[in-house]
Amino acid sequence: MPFTKLGLSDPLLRAIAEAGYTHPSPIQEQAIPAVLKGHDLLAAAQTGTGKTAGFALPLLHRLSQQHYSSNRPIRVLILTPTRELAAQVGESVSQYGAHVHPRLKTEVVFGGVKINPQMMRLRGGVDVLVATPGRLIDLVNQNAVKLDKVESLVLDEADRMLDMGFIRDIKKIIALLPKKRQNLLFSATFSEEIRKLTTGLLVNPIKIEVAARNIAAETVEQVAYLCNKTQKAELLCHLIKTEQWQQVLVFTSTKHGANRLTEKLNKIDIKAAAIHGNKSQGARTSALAGFKAGHVRVLVATDVAARGIDIALLPYVVNYELPRSSADYVHRIGRTGRAGEEGKAISLVSHDELPALKQVEKLIGAAIKREQVSGYEADKIAPPMPPEEPRPQRAPRNNRNVKSTGKAMDKVKSIINATGKVKTSK
Image (tube, rainbow, N blue to C red; front, side):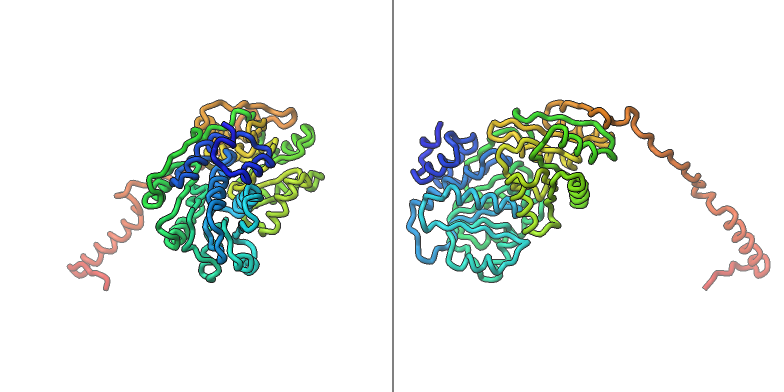
């Protein structure tokens, strides 16, 4: 079914055509009609499925059918877990709404930058507000925004927001909204926490689950290079140079690890930048922009910071270390192989990570091809565990401190013999 059959207005169809799309993705095909009819929505959707257009297009259509008031209250509120995702969603909403109405205004607010410029931009009113929960609470406390006219609420990547500890902020925000409104919740998982959140929030929601959770795209080639942990940086540099990778997203487990790897890459003239929570928002925005433009060859990121990185035709994703959660593996490699395009996901796996690799395979229900690169082979025999030191023998409970106890008893006996009484200490 083409987009033209979904009931969207001509200005939206024009923007869709300019973006190069003709047919909706599965989630778009199901979500757009439901949102147009005003239903609440509960959707299981991972990054890369086209979910942003799934809610942005119908919400923009509904806005375009209404009168634009002079005071311009916030009518659509979209909450996201991270700054990068907020910026990405805001960019998409602006792109899709380019021809809707000259007065249509979208703003994006998030932490990590000064609040005053955001307050100034909100002063004239805004139709669609994309925000991270923490910064929105700050703006509410500063009386910079009012949420009493919100008609539609979107919780994007709700599972990640709960994981990041935003549940209290979300509940505070919901309490400020009109009781009568449309609610759209998107989550990669339907965990017990998500189910609790939906209770009392969604009213007779349409449920959409476009694909089974934890299944990687068929267009993504997955391979695990077995290597020694101490050679991972050298192996990555070797692969980038010999395979001539020009754009690769590398995941590390820690912020410090991301910084160290970025320094090593830059020292051998592989232009790299790191993106993680300790970086200022300006540095993160600059790194992402440079990566998208091709000025930065390697973007090294942690899992949380990478949320919202949406790059068309990203060819390579590398797991420098396997994630702690097997589900995060699917999130990571979902950055490549989008929209039917081919991609490659490479994992550098040391001996101690083999159990984690097996857990990933169990989760995705498929074996991941294992290979070794000449000169960087893993040790054939696992490094021996250090011998355990013999544990000290513990004396039986009733025989402990026999020597000292014996001396004490001799002393008691001497006191009894001398006085005929047992002398107790005061």
